[in-house]
Image (tube, rainbow, N blue to C red):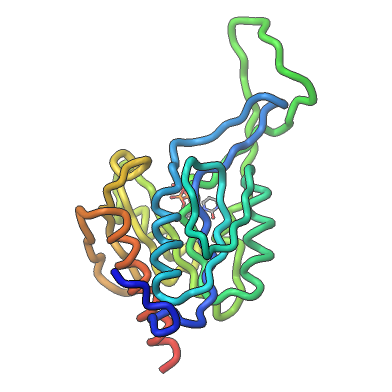
Length: 221
Ligand code: CTP
Ligand code: CA
């Protein structure tokens, strides 16, 4: 699709997108992470910029190159991402959280390399902050993603409600994580789920950005 820029549906809109996995350190060499590639988030950054938005990308480690016009903040842990999001949303209109944020981190980080000894090693993990649930800036449009392997729509609807979201994009983590394919359900409060795809993540991103634009329009009227 053409770059619409200042004529686009998101002209003048400030969007924060999070993408990729987080890394939760265990010791100076090791971390816990997940299979997120960041592709969905980076596709959303490009679609939002093409629609005229100014975009801040807060990204965990990925192998991707972000759109050249995005302001990029690189983070590693869930705690770092939480801090960066808190700051970035202060002057944003939209928050889109595609990042696969770790739900647990090691309860303590060893100062030195953990040496192997016994046959078993038990890790103590502790909950991270739920970034999306903790952000409640009035007027901020919040978009979440739900990655599930079962009961997709039920879990997604629960998250939509619990985190006070305007839109949630629900997909099957087994096929979506790492792939170029986009296939998801879009859920809004009080509406029927709408299936998008199978298509590319680039096209799914355009559909999501169009939906964000129409949600912003319907707020203004
Ligand atoms: N999320 C977040 N902070 C976390 C965990 C998740 O902001 N610590 C966001 C994700 O970026 C996503 C949404 O919440 O937009 C849903 O993430 P998901 O992992 O699907 O759901 P959880 O609420 O973490 O529940 P669970 O993993 O138990 O299904
Ligand atoms: Ca989670």
